[in-house]
Length: 485
Ligand SMILES: [Zn+2]
Image (cartoon, rainbow, N blue to C red; front, side, top):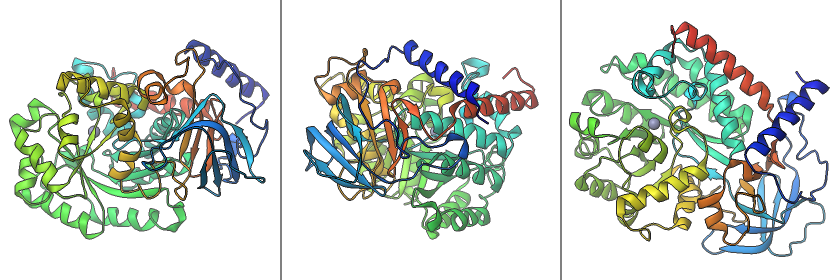
């Protein structure tokens, strides 16, 4: 519900937050002041129309190997597609967004994000309040509506921060309603996503039981049809070898492959894990690894296991914040890239990582690789930016649609201000994005041609309502779980 009071209060709170983040823009953009393309009615619950617009005079970092960087160029978008990218474009019918003092680049692609826990980031700390003990108490008492409110919080922050695709690694599916809740949240927010159907705590405690194949097939049937505009795809999230016996995980993987779902699997996260089993080796020996498998973490993978990853062409999603925060281990990024392994970056969970902030993730990834390799030249910032955009899209099998600003692809792009106090003066776009920027510098976010953030504000989502609903749901769930969690 919105009235004049709440709107002005929201604007005021937004302004205070922006000042607090030292992110005031030194120069307001001269975009057309009002357009139905970026003045959606937040209370309607409807996404804004796609329409036709052009970003004029931006510094374009296309991430397309052929197009490269275009220091002063335009991006023409129509009906969700990138029509043209280049200097001095002519688009007489397009509405104009001023791109001056902005970098235009592809939206960020996250490749592993447990959305369901997003509302609990305020309590997860260390010791008894570590991620695993807290979430194993909260997860089982959550209702589908809690899952929806929590996922919406995570997605809203992601969009605000310039993520245009996320991989929802959903592993609190107590029954099918929880899968539907996540998918509703993804659809309602208008983000591009892969939804990977996982398991629940209950199923984790029953390693001999297989996943609910009927419900996985139902979700695929009901959600992956033409009605989702192609924004949503689906995968299978496995408990995996070591935590389940061979007859169970083999059957599950066979089922997933049988209905065409790619598989995602945590593996080699920590020293504690490899003391129990070496999952990559087990899966390799079972001949189950392949290019349709995404392994997550792999910080404790042995040299032999890293060679297995390269040989079988599995993908690897790396989450530098949770790796360091949980003292899991240092990623082997440089080594894996040299071996030709398809790598990408992920949030994992904001309860541990703090934020859905790909700028920080890129920065930390770069720095952890410096520590791993003891060589600041081993992996360079542009390669990191590629991991956060085009490589994420490759990992999720959607690089023909997104990941670079290539004409013909879908319009998933962001505009990042270059004249804010924390990034000025503007010299090098890649250093700005990887070494300096933060989500408050994201001026505009476009997903599938829909403008979801403009002039630093989410235009289609009622942020205050999302926060209130998530907080309300969290406090009630915490009480049911018998807090102090
Ligand atoms: Zn994870």
